Length: 234
Image 1 (tube, helix red, strand yellow):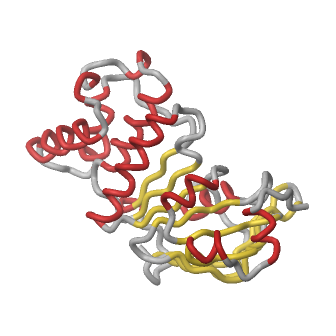
Image 2 (tube, rainbow, N blue to C red):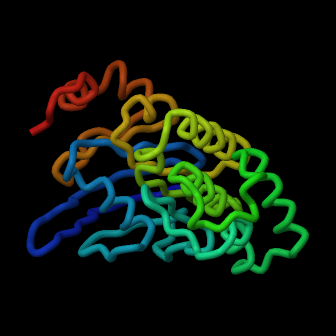
Image 3 (cartoon, rainbow, N blue to C red):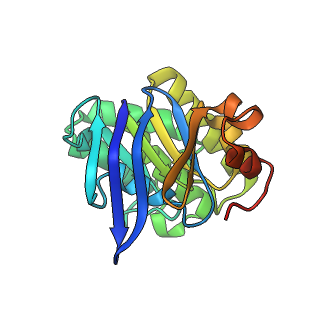
């Protein structure tokens, strides 16, 4: 899914937190949104996901302003699972979309195998570790094969092994299914491992949007170079 942003603005209590003149997120790519605290990263993601309303501007989804709610989903740093089993959590989006029972069962088996969730399928959500919760949330989000997957710091609170598992399935879903993925992350190493494109925001403004290799090796903007080298952007 191609995302085009035009003259997008969002303010809270009179303070402008996001002001982007123009930006394009390419179809079928993994795009990382990075930047210092308060840059507007999560605000941008929430606007694209239609969780909050913009003040001005347009967000186009494959050229249309209508939000394709049935074709997108979000995974948060601290996801909410329904008070039931892992299996029912994964099945929930597919039931809403009227998948057949057979298709639901097959997809649950597939995702459980890929994310090592087989032993947890009948376990209650409130009995899971943080890493297990995040994997279940990801399995639920990927269950109906969305065109657009939005991720807000999905690996921030989990261990390196689980992070590796999640990154592996994200790459697989992107490469095999062509899912467009937009991920907010503070982890530049993760952005470098996963992303095809990288967006740098600072104080709500777009600093740079380019391919990952260019971003990390020869960016156009001097502030991008400083950010990659670990300097504080003020």
